[in-house]
Image (cartoon, rainbow over all chains, first blue to last red; front, side, top):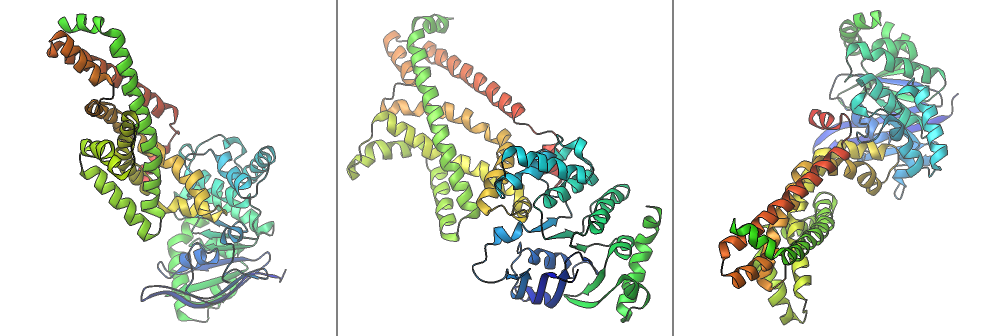
Length: 254
Length: 225
């Protein structure tokens, strides 16, 4: 369980003179579910996008397994198919059905034969409970269903690790549960996951480690119990208290 | 109803002219689409110098009269040692000109689809070009279709200028009928009717295309983003 899948060293990102985050160190081991929390605008999403090179970091290194993916000459497209990503606004391909959304990468990136790709795409849709929606276009699906298709699309590539960028933030409260349920199941199946979220119930229940980020650096990290009950820093306690107050009641119902 | 009689008398002549007009429209539109798409993509995705060239092209071809472009190609190019037939000159002028307009329709739509779809495509390992081809263009073309539909209609009517370099299009046939019958009003009314008919038909075709390529729920989604 302790084999590192993602290793991040001294990662830094700036936009002009504005530092988004600086000198981030992070190790994600196989099977880990890591939840990153923190106030808005602290660089959590940017950090996630740097991890699969959608955004180029300005300093530091990232390893995927034993390969340094920040090294010059890295085939980024090849790297990205091994790092799945789920977006806040789903970002499904709007002109394709749910099935085609999931299938596209299999055919175009993995060069899987059409038939085989279709079977696999259907399996992935079934995995997120949407086998019966295969022929629907994104515009015909609810937000929760769209996000589950988004998860299936990423899963289809058999990634080493899945990144979730506030996957439930754009959802109506009653649709959040179905997405979290899928994520919970993935975590239990042993998928390696890095999740940026404000869903504290999910974090507490599923996370192996919670990372509290603020103003571009990691303030504190530890097990859910350690962070929730024995935070080392006052700032962590303050943030967790506030966010639980905000989101806690809703989750108690879910 | 003189013009109706005239239409009857010159019917086969007008049909041939209309055929040429449709050919000019089809070739101009196709050439313009291919080049326009390249220009739009260059403007958005190419390195700055190439994007600047695309912008300059669009500005020049939209900023000068088509007739000037046509004459430069037909009368001007021979002095550079390039002599093109009338038809070829007409195709080229219409295509090069239409490209500038089509580029703008396409550019707007591609930009509306936006960097988020690019990010989504790249996230599953598609290359930039694959994402453009399989994700961005299929959506952008659908999005552009309603406004782009102005271009075929506009181009069909614009082709009329090519009679000035003696291409035997519908307009040239009208002029011929007017000369033979000494009745310019009836002649031009007759071809006006033919042009109108072609525009109606083209319109119906474009509406059909729009319906056929429609994705359920797609337009709503684009508006929301």
